[in-house]
Length: 84
Length: 84
Image (cartoon, rainbow over all chains, first blue to last red; front, side, top):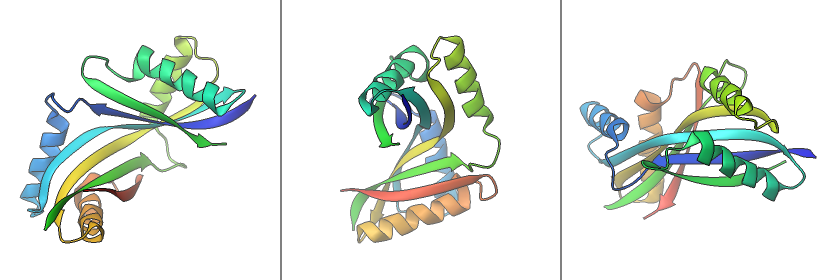
């Protein structure tokens, strides 16, 4: 068993409203960043997981996303091992 | 001028308290994920920026982080172009 770091990204689904992204977009436009076309805001998590292999750590992290970290109706997630 | 997607990651600094990460850690332990050692929670943003080059888009995104998106006292950020 070693500890593996797993990076998890949880983002609002593209077709759904992203109020936090819209708030960021409006705030940046108000600050003069006219070149910004759109902003989307999600979560980035770094999980340290004890597992026999990096693949097993990723599987654990995926289960954590399905149980708690991501809302299956409104969010998509990706999971990737970062190495020891 | 093209639109470039820039991925921004904003994380709480390692040496500081991360109450959201601790909440996630406790919740996952309560759900039975004993293999979790630690959890850290930050933000992931995808910005679409009009710029002449990907490097210019990244520079714009870095300025947005410094002005609004990251708290310079408590958070670190990384910025990377994702391609057109």
